Image 1 (cartoon, rainbow, N blue to C red):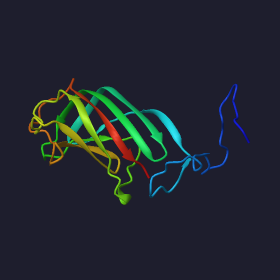
Image 2: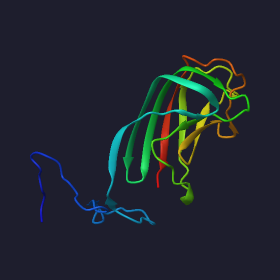
Image 3: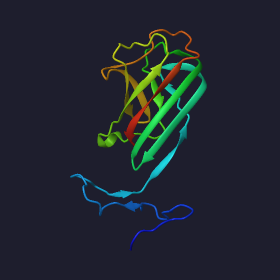
Image 4: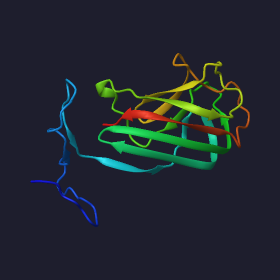
Length: 168
């Protein structure tokens, strides 16, 4: 009973599925299924263009994530060294650090905050990210998937963005 203070070291939960229980705190929303924080992780990953381009080489592949329970926040920063758009019109997709939980209608969302790619079929509304499975797909303002309209060299181009989704 009472408060516990750690002077050095970490609090380690030694049993899987256990964590910090917040159930005694007031104010839980209706439909709450758990008040136990049983997972926290943050780190880096190497994001890639997994669809919509061929022969992609990279100068920079920097990805950062924070996972709290099943909620994942992610950011990516990509600079290509080489690559061309697929000539068959495949939509541009970026890899994610975890697989998204699409079975429970937990889609997720994100934005591309900066890009210097030439000849994307985008309008002036901006690019949003549709999160599905283990990929973030580029969309024009949520309505039309983005692909490249020209197979030319896309070396030295930037894709920067991020978002949130629930993992399995």
